[in-house]
Amino acid sequence: MHQVFEATGLVICTFVPRKVDYHPLAVPAPYYHSNVDSDEVMFYCGGSYGARKGSGIGVGSVSLHPGGHSHGPQPGAVEASLGVQEVDEVAVMVDTLRPLELGEGGRAADDGRYAWTWAGRGPAGPLS
Image (cartoon, rainbow, N blue to C red; front, top):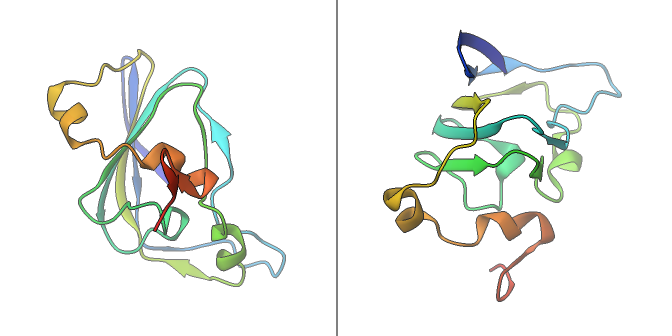
C-alpha cells in the first residue's frame, strides 16, 4: 500500500500488484487496525484481494470503515497468506480526517452483511 496523494483533510493510497515480505516468518496479510482519526473508503478495482476473501468484497466493490471501526483480514486470511510471495490486488483507498456521511446511494448499495463478516456470520445468522 502506498500513499500517492495528500490534500487538506485526506490522503489517497493505492494497492497494486507487488512482491510482499518474503522472510520465512513474515505474515503478508494486513494487520488488524482501527483508524481512530479517519474514515477509510476503498474501491476494489482488480486482481484478487485475499484479505477480504469470503466477505463479499470483489472487483467493483466499495468498503467503508468509519473511524474507530477495527478491521483487518477475514478469518483464515492470515493463515492463507503464509508463504505467499506476491499479490495481484488493485485498489484505491481514501482516508479522510473529517467524518464521512453515507448518502442515499451508499445506503441503497449497502447489503447489511459486510460489517458482520469478521464474526463469520451475518446479522441474522451464519454467512453462506
